[in-house]
Image 1 (cartoon, rainbow, N blue to C red):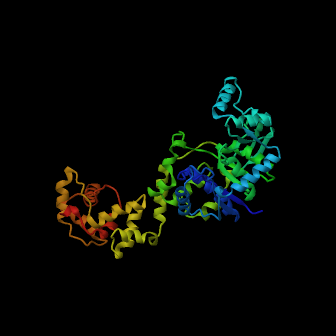
Image 2 (image 1 turned 30 degrees about the vertical axis):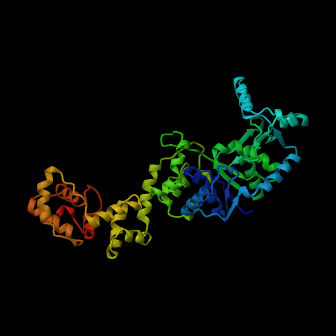
Image 3 (image 1 turned 120 degrees about the horizontal axis):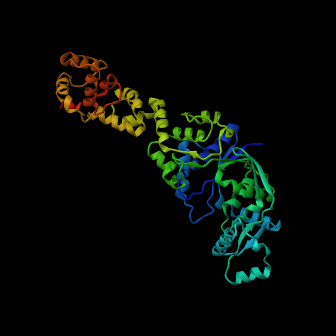
Length: 442
C-alpha cells in the first residue's frame, strides 16, 4: 500500500513553528517511503479563510523545500460532505440538535457543579419530529452531531503508544453548524477516507479528536489511518507558547534571516532522543527521522537556538550561493571570493554581510581607548594607505612593535579596534587586503 500523508492548515493566518513541525513530520514519512504528501487547505470557514494566507503558506512551504504532490481544497468538496452526511443520517449516526450556546453553557456549568464531566446529555437525540418542528417554528436552526458508540476507542499511537479512550466520556461531536458550515472533525474524516490517507501526525491536543474521527471514518466505511501525536511546544522556560505563536510565524522568521535548513533541522529533532544539529538537505533529515524517537512530554522551543544553526548553515554555503548578494553590496568582483571567505566566518545571518561590506568599502568608526590614544596615533602614522596585501598586517605590527615597544594583546587589540571598531572579528591578516579605506587614518 502506498503511504499517503497530508498537511491540512486553515488559511486564517500565517503558519508558525508549530504548524511546521506537523507539516515536516508528515512530509518526511511520505518521503522516506516514496509515498504521497497532500497539501489540503482546510477552508470550510469562508468568513475567516483568505487567499492571501493560502498564498503565504505555499510560499513558506516552497521556501523550506516541502513540496507537495497534490493539492486539495475542502471548500470545493461541499457536495461530497453533504453526501457523507446523508450516509450517516441513513445509518442513524447523525442527529439534529437545537440548543443555543447559552443553554449548552448552562448545562456544562450544572454538570461541573454536580461533579460530573461536562458531556453532552443527548437531549436532542430523544426529540420527536413534532418537537423539532416546534423548535423550527420558534426560528431555531438545527445543527448536527455524530452519535458515538459508547465503547472504548483504542489505537496504537506512533508516538504516545497504546491509547484507550472511553467514548462515553466524550460529547457527541458537532459536525455541521446551524449555518451549514462543515466542521474540521467531519470534513477531515471524509477527506482522509476518500483520499486514502494512511498516516497522520499532529499535535497532542488532537488526541480526543482522533478518538471521535476513528469512529466517524469507520461509520463511513473507511479504515482509520495510523495516528501519531507529537508533543506541544512551550517557551524556553516551559511557559505556554500558543499565545506567542503568531510572533513565531515562518514568514517572520524568514524575514529575520533565519535559514530554512536551521528551521528544518530543529523541527525534525526537537522533542526526540536525537540531538538537534545542522543538516543541509531534506534527504539527510529524512534518513535519520523516526517517529519512535519522539517523546510525549511538552517540548521547549527557543527561537534564539535558531541563530547558531543559521550561522553554521551560512558557513557551509558555497560562494556561488551568495555571489549575487555580495555583488549587490558593491564588493569588487576580484575581491568577492576573498570577502566571502572572511565574512562567512563572522556572520550569524546573511544580512550581516552588509556590515562587513561597509567596513571594507567605507572603513569603520575607530574605537580608541583614552589610554591608547597616543599609541594608536603613532601606529597609524606608520600605516601606509591602501591597497594592502596579505603581509601588510604582519609588517605593520612588526614596525609598530619596534617603534613603541608594545607587544601581545597590548599591541594587537588597540590596532584592531582602531581599524574595525570592534574587539573581535576576522583574522586581521585576511581582512587587511580587503580594506579600501581606513577612517582612522583621516
